[in-house]
Length: 230
Length: 230
Image (cartoon, rainbow over all chains, first blue to last red; front, top):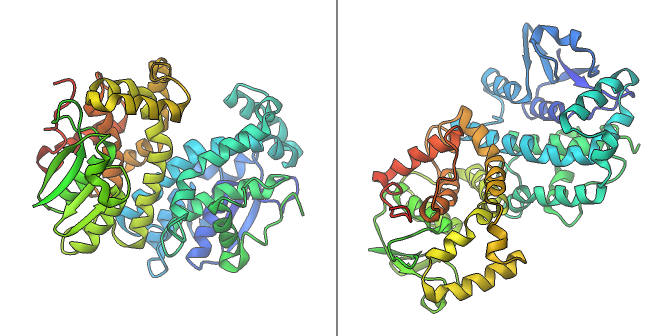
């Protein structure tokens, strides 16, 4: 059975990594069963063979692949009989654009809402590392980053506009069917869904309805995930 | 011959509308010859039959189509033997996402750099309309909007990140070949290229090289366009 190293909270069933969710939905899209192994930020030695310190890391037989985009490429190249995550060169470029937007803009907007929620729910052995690395990256304490919650939620709402306008005329970012572009955005928003004490998406935003649809996909893979609100 | 109503400056050969450039490159992509008619902001009566007051407006035989995205859809539906601008439902959704990003984020970043350049180069009969409508939209005078030019250029640079990361691993936003996603971004940047007194793109940004390639496409359609620097 293939295995995925999946970021976990203090509760080993709390899985909130935006990048790992991109990969879990990629595997499900291809119809590939997988197990997950809970992994914590400070367990770099367990994924040492990848030469880097982040998850997702997928072990598929004798292949080990890291980085959610590289894993999606690997799955399309290896399991060609299953529905493509990124069909053709244009599909790869389109997904790359959505990823560029998510990683440079949306995740920053989400980070300002979520950092303290993450800190409060990760394993105690991860907390010092997490605080130090994130405070160095932002130049502020976690408490300072998160203090203007309403302002950050307004900014998040406005940052979502490209997705909102796409979903006003398309069922999915992939068009009639979901593809890796959908899983990139969905994974990003699963970060908030799993770790945040309240709802971050506004019901009047079309992204909200699309997110509900995605939660139910693949036998409710997202819907069945434990959250801090359970 | 099909005809395009194309926004013009005081100099009728100065054509700087981001939306009209999207359509000119769409027509060229399909190999369809076209004439253009210079049009000014206040000439709403000349395009009255479209029920709205903006260009591009394409007159193709007995069909009149407005809105650059709708024109691209129309061209793909009508000229099916030519290379598609947005192949399939996934291609339409991908282009819609790039358009949502351009129109909600990139054009706002560009606007803060360009508003005064536009004002200074449009037809005198358009200037009062332009100043009033843009000052109402921004809540500031044109001079106030544009005063932190360096700050706006820095913000523009950071806003371009999704395109920059896509173009670091893809030749075009469309993958191996340009498609409507490329023309959406290119058109947006032609706004600056035509109307701005200095260079807005930084040479160390991959978008810069891609833009040079696009300028030369379709027999140098963009390269040959008059600019305020000529």
